[in-house]
Image (cartoon, rainbow, N blue to C red; front, side):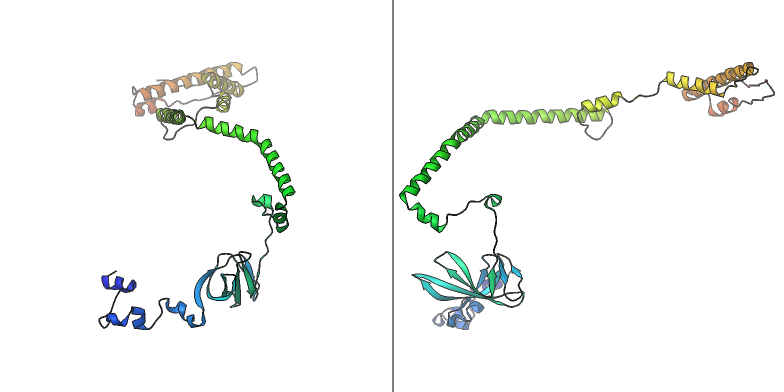
Length: 310
């Protein structure tokens, strides 16, 4: 903002035609210091921003106007309560342009709706709201009675004696807990240090396993679940192969020799294939020669079987 604009915004700019004998700028321009808010000041009315003190029901459209909603209200004095002025606030509702009039009540220290609306009645339970009930007018008058006040004081003293052991114990616990600040700080820092150390160890263990995430500490449930998992061993695989060969063999006695020879040849063929695969992995045999030599042809003419070996 330029200097001239800032001066005009602060109302400190004086035009060249101004002279000190002309008075203030408002007098020179023929306007009030409050501008539009003082347009009815000759009638004793000042326009202000009025905030609704509580929830009300609009008298025109029966809609609720919440507490805290602000209006442009016309403020004027309508009376006095002793030396305290009674102010009246007139405003129009935004929902239906209903005129609402509210006055101050210095006697009861509250606002009173005169016309145009109705206060919303809200009842609540004292225990649910976690508040306390204010004494009624009758109870206020009874407190002036010496006998009633004496009985009330006795009840309060009795309640105090009953609650005193609990309060003393709580106070003692609080004092013991906060008596040594150094010890509390030391324990807290030790706990934080051990926690950081544990996290570092878990991250290191995860990196050794090739993981990029931190594993949680081992639990008994995880150990029990892992113990129930069984992996197949070489013995299980051999037993499975033998059972498959037995199931594939003939059950007739006449062909027992032939089936026995076929089983032996099949086992030898598997051993040769396994040896060739291990040689290939070790780099001792080229893939081309292995593929050529591993070709075997079987001809079954009755009980005759021919196998090509290398």
